[in-house]
Length: 354
Ligand SMILES: Cc1cc2nc3c(=O)[nH]c(=O)nc-3n(C[C@H](O)[C@H](O)[C@H](O)COP(=O)(O)O)c2cc1C
Image (cartoon, helix red, strand yellow):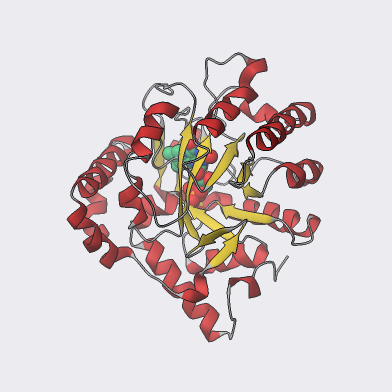
């Protein structure tokens, strides 16, 4: 089906095509009787794929990465699309339009995208009221960012405002310090900035008795030594680490659009992110939750990421190129791989190659 729709969608600007997809999902969500039909096409359940992490049950390890549903507009439709979890957002306290358009590009020859969206979203209050329209049967996470207009020294408080607003409504949070499209955001990777952020988050957790897991998402452009330095405060403050967000590298790309500024996602991220995941797994002796993202297209990619140390994975770019059937395809093939090789569950393969 997607083979028929894709050439039509690819005639449109990528953000316009994305908007059409969101509209279609809104339609589905508005007519709940259509949801079981979607489920029939895209859902795949198998006990061998289930896992409990930080007290949360994940029905399968393939999650939707942040940035697809920026303002929590279609979470109920996404629940039926076969993901083991969905990460909504990035959400900021105040609504903001993001960067001028065009700001999203396909790099077809490279199976990649470049985006410089800049946290376009409807703001935390509207996003919360969108989210509250439904209840959910899979883990629903929230990716948290900061407003462009927030003064530099107050930025860590933006995270706290969003965490506080959603504390009774999400299954997990992701503190996103890795978007390249908000000036200076990645400075939170620096030691003193990061330490201030960790202190703020720790106080918030203690003062509010927070049990919802909080993950941190780092940039793909981090060198292994810097990752090593960040891991001790990360394991103290957070419940897991997402490796990794987009890159600003452009090495080896063929597509004309490689000259665009922004974060590069998709296939070119894969090898680099595997390196980061293996390093984090080794440095934490396999005791800390790692969520892998970046360039996953096939079940072999999923298996490689899990064997490198990730307990869960997240996808975005591959959905643009392969369509929504990819999730159940990956889950089915992963279950087959586990069964065929005599593994009892996902834990049996996590970190095997690290
Ligand atoms: C259009 C677009 C918007 C994104 N927005 C966000 C975001 O708001 N927050 C975030 O943490 N990551 C964001 N990402 C990054 C993805 O969540 C994901 O980590 C990255 O694209 C790597 O996965 P992939 O190669 O499967 O796309 C965005 C990616 C794309 C393509």
